[in-house]
Length: 143
Image (cartoon, rainbow, N blue to C red; front, side):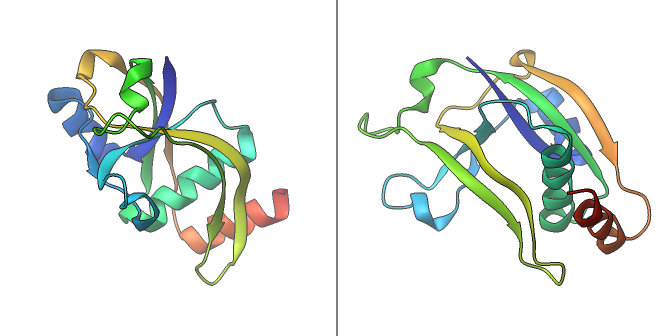
């Protein structure tokens, strides 16, 4: 299986040596599991890609974001108890002063095993120069 993962350039440098490690998940997953790796099931279209970049900039405090292609095993979508898989469609909403949708109804999944670095490929790097709020305002105009 192939998924797509956004992260900071700094995190990608670690991933190159250590692989893609599990990290804390949002609270909505905690009744089943607290750690995993969030992957989009398809590449985002142009505007959604830029929305994902904006989200990473906000949440990771970075201006350099990478898109990774991640090869994973289908059964890695199952929680450690063997009972749950997560494939969700979700909206990505910027709750900061701009209050805009960054993308709507993108399919994603969560995997529960680390991914070795040889199964992670860099697809692109996007650098947001200048002011992030200006960047997001430009996204709003383009949508």
